[in-house]
Image (cartoon, rainbow, N blue to C red; front, side, top):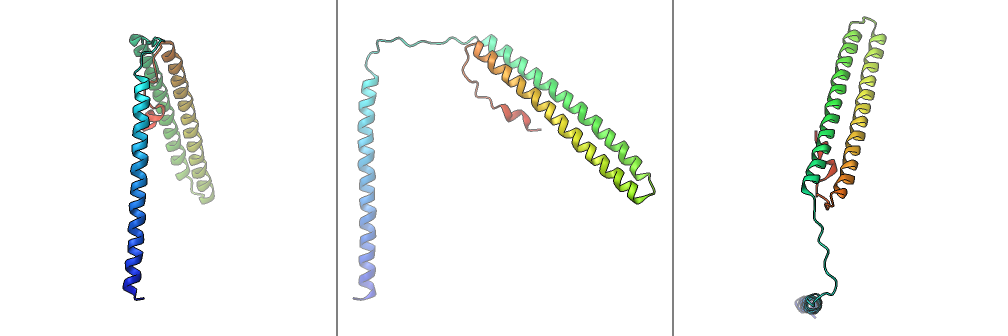
Length: 161
């Protein structure tokens, strides 16, 4: 047999498989639509149990949100104050270090200034995150007391600084 005949046979087999796959998928979709129609019909029947509708206390939720946001803002203000102080401390330490003529002592002082800065920065971030998490945790408790569903807000969004 020639290469053209083999090629034609392979293409025919491939097209047959594609056609079979499409037919199977269409049949499954038709079957699923039939099941959905049956399920919808059953759901439309009159229910003997009444639906309970929760009433959300909007003023309560607004108060909880305002409290959460104020707490996060206060924590952020504290974070900024600590970071500013740490930067000023680092500046002073580096100034003293660069005033030293001894190279080994200068390098040691520079390293100490940067090590101290990183430790202060880490501690400030830790304190901020603890306060932020506590504010959100308290908000969830208060939101539930207001009979409100999840607000859809993402807790970590206020970390984008």
